[in-house]
Image (tube, rainbow, N blue to C red; front, side, top):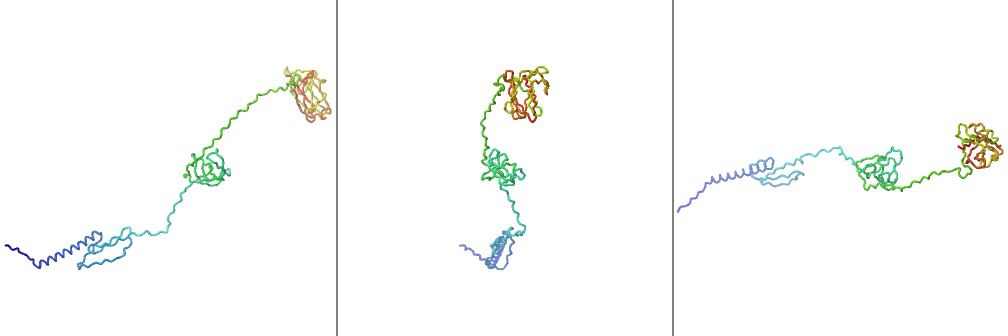
Length: 345
């Protein structure tokens, strides 16, 4: 039977091993401390060779914005770097005030022009002169514009006489025109009623008036061609009459046998009757040698006792029948001499 041998190392060797193991442990601890410092991004703290001392943690207030210190595995503490934003200083205060925003217009307005001829401008119920007038606004008046028509020729606004009205664009100045929108519910332009056709008034056919009808005799055989009153002092009325048939050569043909009837202001003048007729004696007068009837009546025998007045005269033939219509002439002042020509032509 073989006996198993047992080897007992010397005591010096055991002590040497323990020293080596202790040295390795110390190196390992130092390496761990150095490794933690590298991982944290900060410079590491050298490890003292003295004996390890237990570290009692203390609580220190941390400034706001800074990170709390971290403890390494070996008991050492590493301070974290404060964020860059926290390390920057706040900007210095300034006395310059902050700029204020310019007010943005929210509504368009118009001002009635001040250079208009009229003092007031009409306001209507719709965008056309076909609409009724609801009132007026004076020059320089301002209103907010609530709308416009399609053509930008009329603006809607409120209010005149309690109603929304319309004003012609040429009569106003506009501010912030880009804010004007198309009005809602624009009234339709009123259509004037169709007038009832009026039938044309019939023009009556010209009526031929026969002034000679029913006056008896030959009617309008003679017409009065000339009347030439003259001043004779006014003491008498003297008629010089020519009864002629014109158109027969240079010298009108004288007709005898005729006489006249005479009234003054509607009153019969006596002495002008069939007893006095035109003869054959020709008297030279202002119209030529055509006068052959000569009759005189004193002013005292005339109605009113003078020659002035309006006279009516007509021609009769030898049988006393009318041969002309009535003719009128008027005498003034001392006019008492009258030249008359009755012509059958």
